[in-house]
Amino acid sequence: MVDRIDRQIVHAMQVDGRAPFSRVAAVLGVSEQTVARRWRRLRADGVVRVLGLTAPEATEPSWFVRVRVQPAAAGAVAEALARRPDVSWVSLTAGGAEITCSTRPRSARQRDALLLDRLPRTVQVIDLTALSVLHAYVGGPFEWTGFEDPLDDDQITALTPPAPQPPATLMAAEPDDDALLAALATDGRLSYAELAAVTGWSESRVARRVEALRAAGLLYFDLEIANEQLGHPVNALLWLGVAPAAIASVGEALARAPETAYTAVLTGPANLVVAVICRDTAHLYRFLTEQVGSLPVHTLETSTVLRRVKQAGSLMDGPRLTDPEPPPVRRT
Image (cartoon, rainbow, N blue to C red; front, side):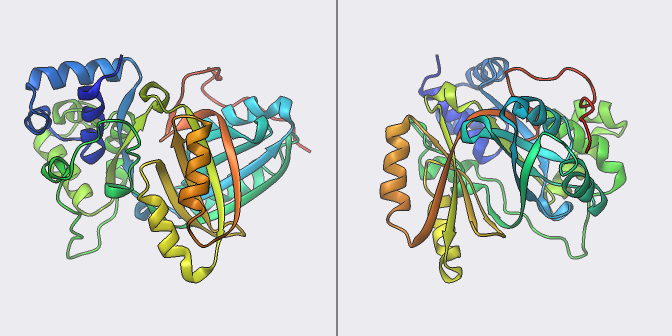
């Protein structure tokens, strides 16, 4: 069972994924031992996990890819995509005949290998559309907070870390950071001692590098939430067509809605994508008719998510391949 304190701990980690248990405890008015014990239970039960992710500025531009496949092959193709390190999340939508994924390539070569070679030459793929992400609304007021008992404004302020302060000289992730970033992408709450063991650095060097990457806006901490266990099992992707002059206002308005988990401006005929998490289909209906319907949206396509195969860079529960590499696919 997930209760009010559990939900508020989840919200606290949304505000700052590396907030010390002592600070979270002080904000929630409970003991540090209670926060630590409940966090370990939530983590062990698969309800929530903190991930340290590389900001878009440190990589090539992100892409949304919609892949129509033969229904019988959808699971295998989705699992193969999920195994790729440059693919951050994968969902099955449209009755299982479409795969939607987000890819963040480290280089133009890696991007082209997926979008121009691998997917187009896969026999099971009927059609694909690649949409470049121009702007994403993430963090702070744009987090999903549709669950019960969210923190109030004073509690959020007390937990909010300082805003990134770009250094005087341009900073970028370096090859030496790879082991550090890979470890944080698995568990964003690893201690400096644990990160030192992974990287071979001293704890002080690890602490300085993590804080420097974070301050420069190159590293951020995201929360992977099993929203079903918080009483919100309905997931949907909304593809919106909005007039150029209204993109910013519509995008921000939807991104601030409690039901919204992710909003981004895209290239293509649908220039906004919105990921929505709701309690049930009636809740989704109200969101569409009341929230979306009150905005200057010209076109709307709604895709219900049947299964999330990968989220925030990690594989989800459910059937999946166990081989270290994706299985070979038949080529044309």
